[in-house]
Amino acid sequence: MAGKAILYDYWRSSASYRVRIALNVLGLDYETVPVDLLKGEHKGINHLTRNPQGLVPALAMDGHMMTQSLAIIEYLDEVFPDAGFLPADPVGRQRVRALSYAIAMEIHPVCNLGVISHVMELTGGSEETRGLWMRKFIAEGLAAVETMLDHPDTGTFCHGDTPGMADFCLVPQVYNARRWGAEIDHLLRIKGIVDHCEAVEAFTAAHPDRVKAEV
Image 1 (cartoon, helix red, strand yellow):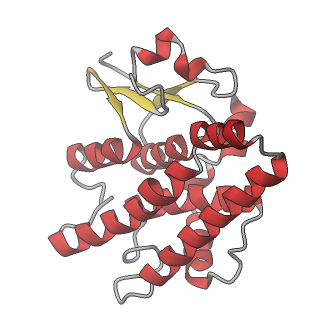
Image 2 (cartoon, rainbow, N blue to C red):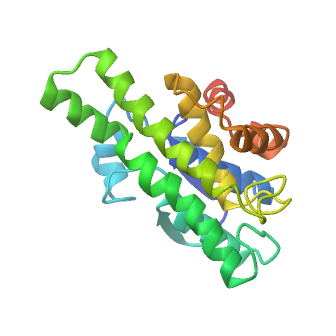
């Protein structure tokens, strides 16, 4: 697996979206191999050998197969000293992790395809039920993040004036909020940060619509 990095992802996966942004910010040349979640390819033996959890993304890099988006981003931050995905000081690193985890470990899991599909199966829910579920948890979660951003260390981006791991998590979650029609227009700190992120090519190049068009 040495040589050019290979990212196994799905175009609309939030977790994959985060890693695409990070790789783009670093300017790394990597190959993308799609794993179609709707066709169940993530549960096939080929992908399970990459990630026993049957999740995306998986990143083949430096002779290793890596999983879990935030762990991958932190790896990149460690092996590229100028990445700046997390601040240098412990308190700043804790804050960026807290913002990232609030999204990736609180909002995202309950809105994951596998979770919502199981909820729908158990309840016999309609598409209306799916939408209500997604809008509730995304809106409530992002409202909490908005409050967390009421902090002196918030700058142009989630922490200071350089995009980092928290921004890599925020932008995909806002994409999902828009997709599901969650009420977030009043979250002005989030809106301002996302507007700045969307002006950066590394973010726009990772956008699901652009990635899908290139597959």
